[in-house]
Image (cartoon, rainbow, N blue to C red):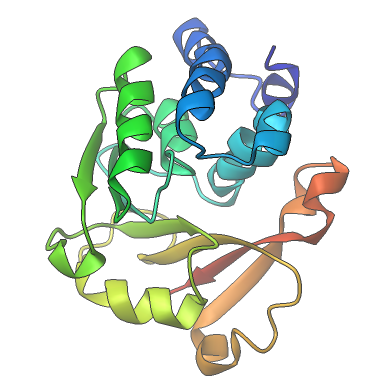
Length: 208
């Protein structure tokens, strides 16, 4: 069921494999009730959503004890796959759309994820401090950085300085102009060979 995930992450434990496998029936069941993933795309869940989220885990291996904010998590991407991959890291998922957050919460509970917390609301209502903010194409990078700068901890614990890590696609040259001096872009196709990733990128922004 998760052969592609196991190909790129061969050191998963049996419990992690079981959690990843459980995502498929859970998301299909919930997607029939609440459309969190495009109906025509649900069959591509492994590559287009789970593996795409896990690209962040190729870019950085979060150290145990780290805390990560997922801005605009929707149905739980990228945070839920990352929370499975990094069981000793805490993930806080926030979204303004309550019904989507409900799906993420139900999925997390069903697979026994204990390193996640949830907040229904706007980023302005989130006062926590985090090592990194992650997000999946929610808004322009400069906007995310501006909105979440107050939430990024000054205490450094990882190999990369704290900042914002997003999953994006296409030509980002115009979007990144305002923050190009504090941002870097990595092609996800450097790690994953599936055609879906040919135009997909990770963008990392830090003011450290």
